[in-house]
Length: 279
Image 1 (tube, rainbow, N blue to C red):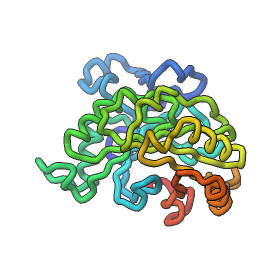
Image 2 (image 1 turned 90 degrees about the vertical axis):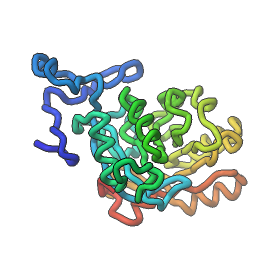
Image 3 (image 1 turned 180 degrees about the vertical axis):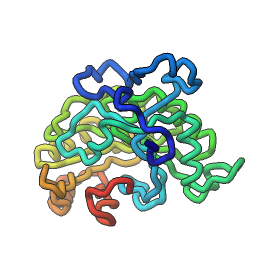
Image 4 (image 1 turned 180 degrees about the horizontal axis):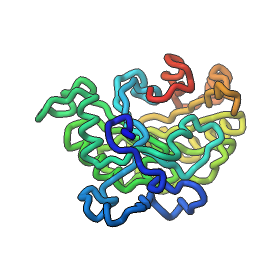
């Protein structure tokens, strides 16, 4: 069966092993049920990645919200946040090489041959997930996109060290709050790896989350480290799996405490139904 980009869907026996694994110290592994076939395929597991979707939309969050953007969503995540809205990216995916991904991005960005990505109709590309840093191929992919002239962003959970990425990549780094269910997963080395073009984001679902984010922001002087600190209220699940945090309530807290942060709303969830994929 062909995937959304025309590449072959992974055989069930070749799917990501995302359950019952020690993801803290491992990376994605492709398990091939036909090794003799794989040996004859030049696109070996060393240069293949699993991709959930590649699509064009508008940037929904952060300081570039509203700008046209092409998103590359990698498959797999080692965290299980209580309010995660992309659980469909935990498993499955389409096996693609870096070259496959670049070709699809060029197509969606309307980049002509030999043209710089900066001059394409859509010059902005975001790498996301899942957790994109679980797959080793993210690094050559980021380098190749930069070499084409695109502005490249990555959105990551903060649990993985971002310092291996090319410096030019704009890093949107989460710090998980207590009621995410994944507190204390942030890699503190990321505080030294980010700089004035990057952003640090907190997703908040409760007053306790807010107080944690407020204190972390102050104690780590985040506003002096990055371009913007984002406080994003969790959007209520349309199926009732988790409650949201009212943006107005969050704004009142921010103003009362005089925090140097930006309110971050998920713009795409106001444009489309909140559960819509590929937007």
